[in-house]
Length: 384
Image 1 (tube, one colour):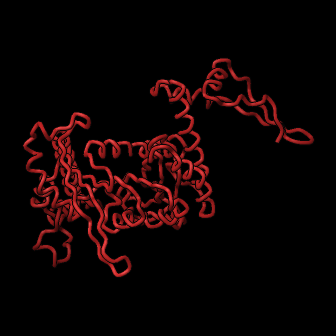
Image 2 (cartoon, helix red, strand yellow; image 1 turned 90 degrees about the vertical axis):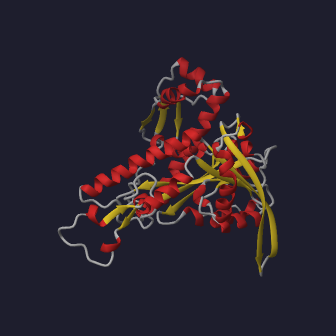
Image 3 (cartoon, one colour; image 1 turned 90 degrees about the horizontal axis):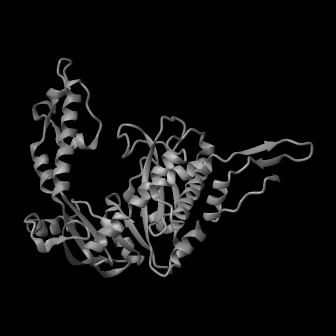
């Protein structure tokens, strides 16, 4: 992984690396890293976390780590910088989602001279102030605020990030805050959240209390019931009520999203870089569905080894997809081509001295495909 990281740093352009985590649900009661946390697939199930670092330029994995399911994303960057200490004199650029948004993380990246494009949470003070200043003009949908390249309204504000500590003294760094507004996204967010709230109400009617952060955000316990124990004849629907003020606060920022960057001054450029973070989401999908990493069925001593093998298979798959792109293959045909290569069978033949392995006959079409992808045709028979 150190060699891959160094190779990615040595390109002509400063590549952006997308860093993110995914949750893998587990019923295991013996794996120590299985714990309750912010499960992105099923909020009510325990999980472990897998962190991936992906080069946005070539889409290849550079780094991975197995994490305890209860660890929050916001606390991971410190360990990432420790693991990447050998690249201290290289230019590193990270793309991060809102899960890593904290003043401490931004200050740490400033001090380590790490470039970044990151999603900003609306409750971050500097983000809230900027949104309040820029959103009124963006909601007017003025033509001069619209960007054709990204398909939404946007505005940028540059601020100076100040910090004063005994260890580092006074520090000042430029910080670019990009605010975006999309009317279609606004309507979609309101509709989706309305459907979710209605599902929460239906579960309360059935006597279930959802264990989800959004339920706790929009539903509060009734004041007259807070200091009393729940009577046997009182249903959950009588203990909780919909919080209108939380809904009003939610609708005020619908359709709006905010990015922060240490170097990228253009709102359009920042969003294009951030959208390429989709490469890590696709890698997670491949890891879970194509490489068999959706369920962790192993003992404690085999967990790290199983994840490592799955990570290697992910690297090989993504490298092969990249070769297909360079060979001019139509992307929709990629799954079919991979299935063709996956159909090749390797047989094992036991002999008196050493076991021999031999391939079944490789069809001519598959041979031509392998030559096109610069894959060496394997020897018909070989000994291990």
